Length: 220
Ligand code: DX5
Ligand code: ZN
Image 1 (cartoon, rainbow, N blue to C red):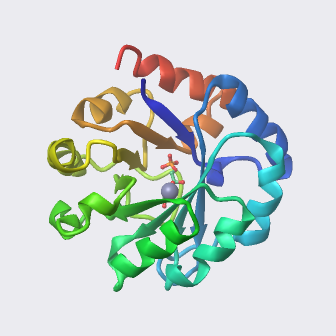
Image 2 (cartoon, protein in one colour):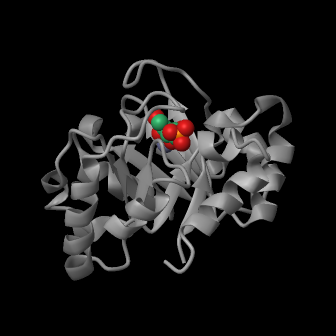
């Protein structure tokens, strides 16, 4: 069964408690929280106090996608605020092994995200240490961007390598996912789909948004 991780970046921040309840009712598996610092990406979103408050609003696990410089400095704070999974970008994690160890030391799950232009091979040496790989199908920074096709090849490659070397590692895909492309993304190897705009911007509301993604990937 495919897992759905709604990205609350596209939610209505004024009624975040209700938005969380709606996705939970609809059958979402976890909450995807995009943290941006205006340095690694050209946008600023939310930080530690927001995660801490949201933690009281739902039982769903939290995955925190850190699109920030020096993510290693914030692992402890986000863990204490309520993150269950911490995802860092490979491109700005110079000491990736140490950063992943820092996440494990906090007893959290460790994920690494790859930008569209970053090849699968950069993970070659550390595949066994990962709980999750996040393949970006937009350039990180904003919700509501157009889905980029070419990382589908990388999803297939990684899925194949992980099946041999770390079958328990989750394959997640993030950016421009909607009911029209969800099935293709899953067929390429995704097990977890992040979706912001197609969930929270759905004309029928977030509950309908989650349900339409579940429907689109039925039987997978
Ligand atoms: C992009 C973020 C995504 C984004 C997804 O930088 O990492 O998680 O919020 O939103 P949509 O589904 O609108 O592309
Ligand atoms: Zn994200």
